[in-house]
Amino acid sequence: MSRHEPLSAKSTEDLVASRLQALDDEKGTKETVQVEWRGAPKSLPVISMPLSLLYYNPDTHRIRAQRDFDAAGNAAITADPWGTDAQQYLDYLLSAAPNDPSKVDPAFEKLRDDLASYGQKDAGIITPSGILINGNSRCAALREGNATQMRVAVLPADWSWPDVTAVELELQMRKDYRRDYSFVNTLLALDEAIADVGSETAMKAFRMQKTTFNRSVWILQTMRDLVDRSASSGGSSLNLRDFENDQGKLEELYRTYSATAKSDPAAADLLRESRLVGLLLDKSKTDMRLVTDRFLTDYLDKSLVGTQFDMHPAEQGTAIPGLGRGLPSEPAGLQRAKKLVDAIAKLKTDLASDDHETQVKAQSQFSVIDKAVESALDAAGKSARLRKTQQAAIDKINDAADTLEQAVLEVGDAKSKHALDESALDEAVTNLRRSLSMFAGSVSRLATLPKSSADWLSALRAIKDD
Figure 1: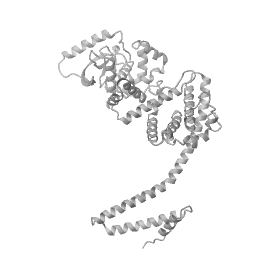
Figure 2 (figure 1 turned 135 degrees about the vertical axis):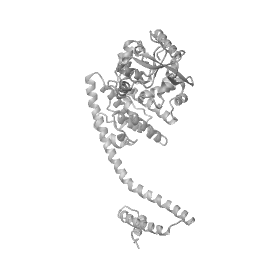
Figure 3 (figure 1 turned 180 degrees about the vertical axis):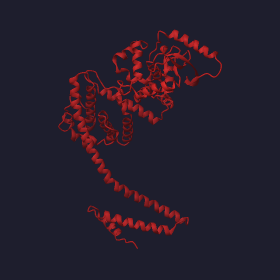
Figure 4 (figure 1 turned 90 degrees about the horizontal axis):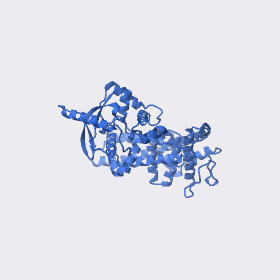
């Protein structure tokens, strides 16, 4: 957290104080912003301030995962967060797309255009020294639109940095907030809150149910694990922002993993690693649903034969360099899956390398593994469609049996209440006899039926309508 304040803090505080005093002298209704302040609601007075005197908050959670996009910019923030270089870099990040900071975020462009067309609807919030607590993006958008003033509410004079964090997060969690934090930055904000105030308080502050909280913590840990496993010998690695577009996939992975872990923890671990392969290769949610704990052994192992990623059998070692030894206490399939995830994660790091030779080599290997996984997914898809076709008829028969059992209860209930329409029942029974005869004719042609079932179906076929 940036504990010191800008050099211009005193002059800004004087201007803020004079404008607050002028506001007190005015008659009529005054604009305020209500926030949660140290456990109780508080109304903050709103004034207009020159944009030139406002500072972006270097610790805002909005751009937490993107700060290291540019090493020089990040270093400037660390060295002097209120300096020109740092503030210009923050201005850049506030308009950048969370998943790719080299591009402008469409949500920022929409905000900028809205402010230009309709003006500022909601006031930002600043410290008395001009540091923006809420409204960093709006400030950047107003500046891009050549505005000169911004309406801001002012924190009490006895503010502290923990107050700043609490107010920022409380406002962000409101449903009507204009521009949400990105997926990764929300997780990082939650993680910081857990470290500051504990899990229970953080969960309450973020208005999360226990299941959503556990899922968020698990997903962030999974992403951090992938970042660690992707580290190359040169120190480069993936970044958390690389997973900005994977929210749906990771949430579905958590649900499937958790459900499987209840009955088979080992299968759940293998499922997780196998699906992380698909995640790193940017496969769709539909494709990833084809990946079960049997995906590696039933499909992918076959596709990897003859490639540098052939890891079967595990006891003979692996042809992938630099992955280390598997843990002997783990099942062989899980060892292979983890090594494959490690290899792909490192390849993704190398794809972003500044060294052309490293990048070209990584692209070649990445294409090999991607082709193998596509082949395995195709085989898994065909098997899934076959199983669905095979099971569809059985499911319908079981549904029919359940319906007949329910009909027995309904007929008994109607008879006991003297409410049975016997004419309608006769018609329904006739339709049932016809359907059963047709069903028997279709199924009895199967040569593999047990004799008891075949005899019973033959008797059904002999039923004739009156």
